[in-house]
Image (cartoon, rainbow, N blue to C red; front, side, top):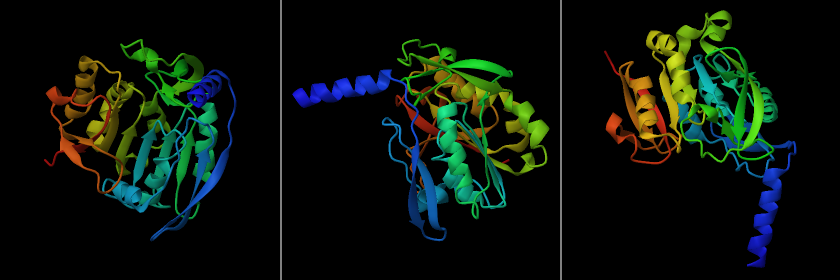
Length: 275
C-alpha cells in the first residue's frame, strides 16, 4: 500500500512539473530493410515505440514506392518512420507536429535512416487559418494533447496549455508541394478530436486525389461529433473501417454511421470506393 501511494505521488509530481526530455536511439533489424534506427523519447509517460516489418507492410498496402504520405499529428514519428520506409527514398512523408518539445524528437527521427527514407518534419498544426493557437495537454511537460478547445466535451482533463503555430495546410501544400500531390496515396490524421475539422478543410484535396485516409475516433467525442467525423470521409464516397492496429494483419470492421459509438476510442481507415 505504501509503495502504491509513493508511486502515485511520484506520478503526480512528474505530471505537474515541467521538464524537457531527451531521447535514446533504438535499433531494429528488419528483414529487407536491414538495421532501422528510431529515436525513443524519454518522457516517462511515453510508451516504448517499435518499428516492425508488419507495420511497414501495413503502409505498403495503402501506398506504393515513390508515393506521398501526409502524417498530421506525427508525434515523435512512430507512424512516420514505417510510412517512410514503405514509400522508400523516392517517396516523401510530410510529418506535422506543432508541439516544440515533441517536434525535436520527430526532427531527429526524420534525419535517421537517410538511405531508405525521405521525411520532411513540419513544426505546425493543420488549422483553418494561419496563426497561434492554444493546445491542451495532460501534463506539464506536454506529452499528450491537442486542440481540445474545439471539442464539445470540456471535461478532457488536459489542463496544461501550450501555444503552438497553426497553418492552413491545404494552402501550404498548394504553395510548396503542388508537383507531388498527384502522388498522394495516404492521409493520416491523429488530432485528438480535431480530425473532422482538418478533413473538412482538406475536402477539395480529398475529392481530387482520393487518397486512403486514416483518422482517430477520439474517446471524448459526442455521438454528433462521431457522426460528423464519419461524414467528413463518407461524403467523398469512401468505405470506412474500424481497424485494431497499424499492422498488416490488423482486422478491419466495416462501419456505418449509426455504429460510430460501438467503441469508446478506435482507429479508422477510409478507402475510396471503386468507381
